[in-house]
Length: 266
Image (cartoon, rainbow, N blue to C red):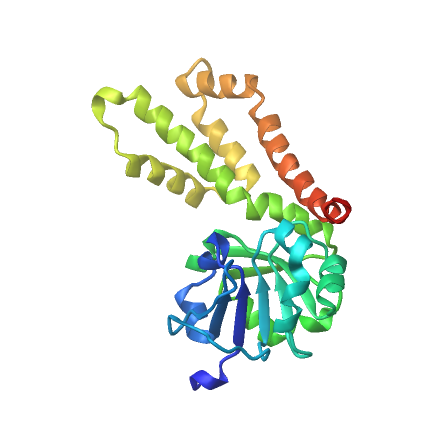
């Protein structure tokens, strides 16, 4: 396939999430332009500035901060044509809000995560018009990893909390374990890679909640070292802490769209 036949994509916003979507697989399958915060468009494939643009993009990804879109999103209308499909990666901003600001009905919402760079994102997608989810869009999004369709828009808020923000929560928890282990074993210069490998090995052999429960039980013996540690973790109600962490992220996602009313009144 020649380069001219590849779908033409515009990233509106070029921050951390946008850059994490740029897997080798994606770069080989589409031509990507990116609009940065200084309103400069760059051809990502060719690594050069675009002096004159045509609104002939097949897909536009909204990768800007939600508050930026709420206050000045109408400036992006000029990049759309009647054929353009808008793919919003913004947390919390409803389809109805995006449709109103961009004056378009060809919009889907997705929630990828930063692991898309390695084709490991579990990308959730929601759209009102199911016909928009055609084979071309599936092929495009499969560059990020797996695709999970959801039935209602609120599930995108859930996906934002668990799958969008979740990798950061998991990394934070793992890092706490790593730091605590190194502190305990300070005289012995414990290798961080060995500790990370420990997490990988546990997950590779246990891939369901029940298996993890059974795994803990199989190691724990009455009055043993594992039981002593597990009992302490339970006494600190870590399950409630994790649930509350996810709940706060979920509630924050739900709040964001309503902030458009506040921005207009200020």
